[in-house]
Length: 216
Image (tube, rainbow, N blue to C red; front, side):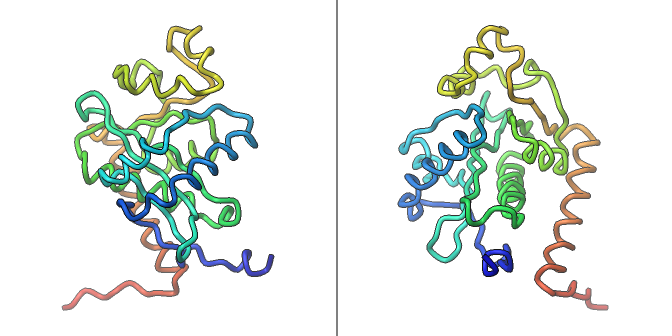
């Protein structure tokens, strides 16, 4: 236990996945399903091939402790790339409570912002921890009507245990909370900038590094 408590989350590598990481997919899917059962909440199920395709497209962020799977998130674009979602955020049991979820969430967000700088980033989640991270990054709560109307996105909810709620309300609301980052909203951009500044300082502090001085 002491070893896990003293774990430095910055010793875990967080990176953009590629084909070489497909060997972790079954573990990823099992971890996501197990976490959903523990929480008793719904989750959109994804197939092995679906995640593999995302890895080949450079739309997956994976965390590894050496060769051991530690965490995961993926990115999808909708409505002709006008909307982007970072989804499936998960951390393996032994690596939880060390801030790794936050690192993965930030990495996926930054990757999405880099690849689709003009897109609106949105999130559908029932988890308070994810809502807190979204708020940190500049997301604001919105109605479901503010999200993409791309039918292929909403079909992803078919496997969720709460899908009947979504259908009964004509897709106006469900158990999840909708949140949106709009790159044209100055409030979102300000929070994004503040978050980036804070994160850099936090990394320097936790890794015992000092900021590099700018040459005179």
